[in-house]
Length: 485
Ligand code: NDP
Ligand code: HEM
Image (cartoon, protein in one colour):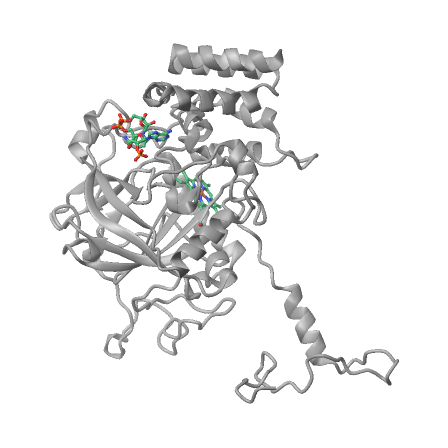
């Protein structure tokens, strides 16, 4: 054995004499109860898994930098958005949505684009997708939607009837399902996707003005996609391999970062509800403004510690950045931290990949694995307010209070049904933009699933495609009928 090796130890640090044999009562006899090292090994092994994410379970992540190229100081006090040239460390995790941890990288599925900015005033997360819109505009339907898109609870097989039955009953999904069934539905690799905040977020400046903002990350590698047939020939881990190998080779993938910005005043009268995540802001109304570059340049060292334990949350905002009244986003402000506490534990933000790169001081105490961040387990005061200012006890920072947000005039607390808020125009706009080849791919991909559904579901979907565009409806109807012979 090389004498450069370090000594093997138990998890408590004691040197291990033998890692190959258990202690036994005689050469052919049973294992004895004093094999605590064997028991430690097996017990730890039994605990190697944590629950996989309920959605976006399969993913790949890397570290990198965000470089600001245009100051956003007119819009925000956020300290990392002030001077062109400023750099902020980031962590970006790509994912598929519906499959489990061992599913394929090449599913026809949105790709998650979850981005953590380690700013000097805390972590800011944009937990977006590679699509500018989403299937729903109210979080109350999210569990139903996900149930319908995952495998059948009895057969554990893909279930086109459930997928389309949900969409037939929720026409608000049409815009996003048109993107999903288009050529963009299966990206060639994670390097070849755009990322979007999808939701409208906000920025606020020192005058107390708020601006509504959508973030767009446009791939510098170009959009590249696969057909169903091409995807079927790829190994399940292809996108993970592509990301790791390109970064290891020094071919760092990058994205051009753009924003669309709307004032609060404009939002009041905009013809489209700016907080409806099933819709985009057309570029002709709100052109993209280029503000930076994002680059991935370092792979994770340990997939489990960094990728599996990564915890992104739309509620992670920093001074100068805020959310919006988008109903879906509001639901997500609760859902993610709850998921992390269940999946990882109460102190998930102390794990290195999630830990802020700035000091953390608060009065939260204890819980499993408390103390990974020493200042939080500190010996100082564990209550607030207190009289310990001279000892450096943390105090509130009132100047980071977000400006107040006006509510609609005379608003009533009630149930407001927004299910019919123009579900079709933008799906139609997208269809019209497509080349004939893209339209062919779209209708073929739709017909693959829809032709396996019941007549009532087919009929309801035909009517939705008709409402988006007459030719869209006609083409899908023809293709489904062709399949049915
Ligand atoms: P524009 O012509 O100004 O923009 C069209 C956008 O569509 C481009 O950003 C292009 O971006 C993107 N695109 C092209 N093909 C597809 C596809 N198959 N799936 C998804 N995106 C695609 O038009 P508008 O701004 O008026 O929007 C028209 C339609 O374009 C919308 O209804 C929406 O479906 C789609 N779109 C709009 C976006 C927006 O923020 N306004 C963003 C993305 C899509 P690129 O090739 O760089 O991805
Ligand atoms: C992951 C819930 C909508 C993007 C998750 C997770 C949950 C969740 C519970 C797993 C979190 C974890 O265990 O770490 C919801 C709910 C939604 C919603 C309740 C609607 C109300 C959306 C939307 C987007 C999105 C609209 C994109 C625009 C993502 C991404 C991840 C994720 C990218 C993976 C994050 C990672 O890489 O760790 N979601 N989601 N979700 N969600 Fe959502």
